[in-house]
Length: 79
Image (tube, rainbow, N blue to C red; front, side, top):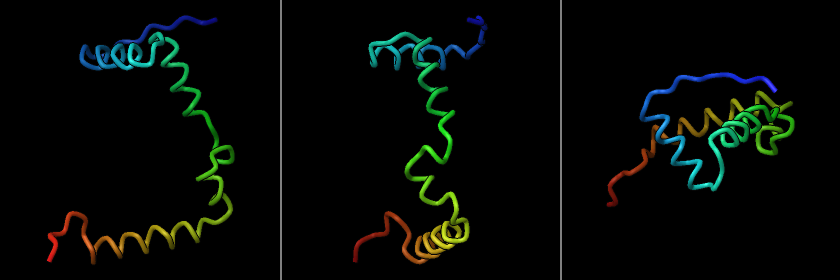
């Protein structure tokens, strides 16, 4: 196993320790879990995997969502 040393800002380090404590784990295990989640390929992720071979469809979905958002902004006051 290779050992590395990482420098973190004090607030980030404190928050990381807090998250690890909330999950009843160590900071090292938390980092391992985070890196494992990042290494999941799109073909293994069920949501992104659905669109792996449909880039045009995904572009159309995003375009439709942005158009709808421009016409119906979130947090619009109720009439």
